[in-house]
Structures are given as structure tokens and as C-alpha cells.
Image (cartoon, rainbow, N blue to C red; front, side, top):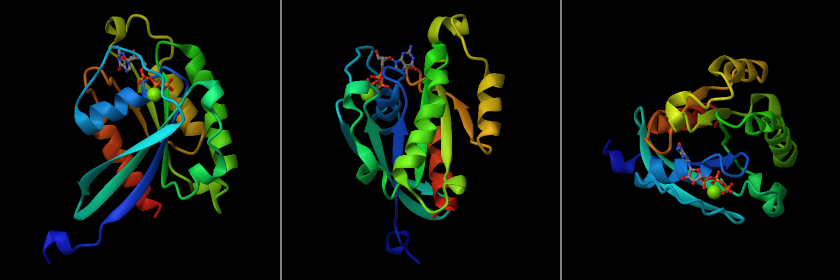
Length: 182
Ligand code: GTP
Ligand code: MG
């Protein structure tokens, strides 16, 4: 069969995490291969799409970038409905952004209100590993991996949106994890 005739799968991915951890930057790096040093807070939420091939399947990733800033947290249940994967992002150099992962995780499950929350796929990204050659790091890889294990074996990637490090790999895993849960 010609590849264009194969069924395309649309996967809805929600990206969550504190303000400034690099959610928008990761998405821009992944979809456009662009990075900007300048910080421009996301307001509300917006999505981009990217077509990728996972094994023999053509997949359209619909990636929803959200606002980390508290005053924009009004997305609510309707927004999370139908999600196939949730990507949590923290900044390895700022411990507080790691501490809030529990809130993001639990709040997402609560709002999304799915049938089987235990089985819902998450992927964790520890971003900005490039900063200061790793010398200003505040959260160890072990600590992050322990958290992932305690939350039901969440896949973990250390990334740099700035250098494009592990970004492609992370989103491929997101697509695979989401597909498995289809
Ligand atoms: P909100 O939209 O407020 O939720 O923030 P965000 O999570 O989308 O963060 P954003 O992508 O806007 O990045 C915040 C700042 O961190 C920007 O100045 C980026 O240039 C910078 N930044 C993002 N990722 C990296 C990275 O991997 N390394 C470095 N050095 N800087 C990064
Ligand atoms: Mg943003």
C-alpha cells in the first residue's frame, strides 16, 4: 500500500510545567529548529502540528503549548480532554520547578478526568542542561528518575532546547508512548 493511503493518526499532546522552564522553546526547537534567548511568556495556549513517522505509521503530533504563569491557569477540563500524552517539563537548574511537578501531574489527571488515570502516559523532560556547563544544576538525574519511577515508570529525558539536545528523541518517545495508549 502507498504510504499516503495509510490511516493517519492524530495525537494530542499537552505540555505543562512552570513558567520559564522552556516549554515554548522545546516546541520551537522541535518543530522549527529555532531557538530564541528572549523570553516571551505564553498567554493561554496554542498548538503546533508536526507529521512524523513512527515505525510504519504516519502520525500527526498536535502539540499544545501552555502558559506556566499562574494568572493564565484557566484552561480547564475541556482543554485537556482527548489528550493522548502529557509532557511535563522542569528546569534542572531551579529546584522549585521540580517540586511543582507533583501539582502539574495531579492537576492534569484530575482535570482530564479519564477512565483509567493510572495508565495515562506522561513523559518528563529536564530542560536547560546546557546552562553553565552543568555547574548550576540543582536537581540530579537520579532524583528525577526516582520521581519517574514513583509515578509509574514515566520515561525521562534530559534536554536542551537551546542546543537541540535530546529534543527529537524526547518527542519521538512522546509519540510512541501516546500510540501505545491509543
Ligand atoms: P511560559 O510560557 O511562561 O510558561 O514559559 P516557557 O516554559 O514557555 O519558557 P520559554 O520557552 O519561553 O523559555 C524561557 C527562557 O528560557 C527563554 O529566555 C529561553 O531562551 C530560555 N531557555 C529555554 N530553554 C532553554 C535551554 O534549553 N537552555 C537555555 N540556556 N535557555 C533556555
Ligand atoms: Mg511558553
